[in-house]
Length: 361
Image (cartoon, rainbow, N blue to C red; front, top):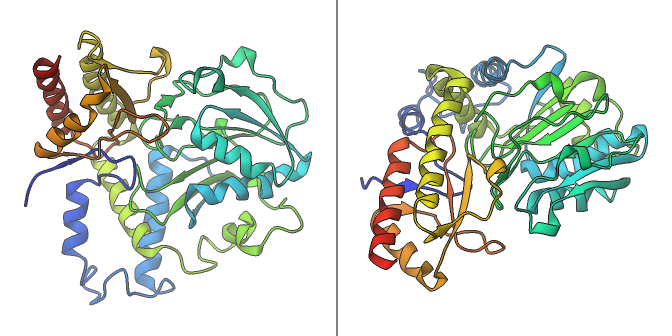
């Protein structure tokens, strides 16, 4: 089997050890004679899987007991609607911080359900920075404040948790959840799609404070009401069983490596390798993002001569460095280096970048 390094933004690389365990258990999970994909979600086998999955996530993130963990479907995009449906009813108004593509998507959807105040926006500089919190124009009567801690496409990441007073803070952590410690108690709700740092696509994790549940707008469909899933232990309908299973394996993989705090140190080292390669290239490569908010997970960069983009990608692929093309709205390249990307992959990438710059600079 050819060794490749997959820098895709998502669905993204998974830990090799997890894939090997899933492969070994694919036909027969723990002597049950069944694959996880074919066992009943109501049976004792899957009940054990989902219980351990939630317990391990609670341990990894130190989730307080007054928060519910919901393992849902529909990806993070479903939460663009579910969040306002469940939370905006208190005042009919919410604040959103616009820092890029995914924040814009959340804003567009939320406007269907209430009055949305754009408290701050980075659109004036093409979403390459985070507006200073001191300049945010927050509403006095907002039901919640929503922000996107890491913009997968633009490569902008908050290096702090915003302070918004007593108003519930809502975060779309799809692309940086479990990459660094967070104080869950500072949030009213956290959500994230699985296909970046948690597992395969098809699963979305929602961590919601209990007092925020049970206030859905009257027209909210049963399946979009957090109360439905909280009361049923994420088992109101058939969950994404295989995605839950693999997520559980990844949580155990993280625990075996020292947890989120240890993973953060690895992520800092990996990101530094790439940013140093960009800064030390003499201008051959360029990062469009302000230095104080550069993402550790998604690193966009451009070449001084964009006519070399095709050659860069072709040569990278020949060296088994895959999925480096940047998003069409940003251009250039993007290296997504989630938890499962080994530091050897990042080192191989920066070695190639230096070699390419020497030959084409």
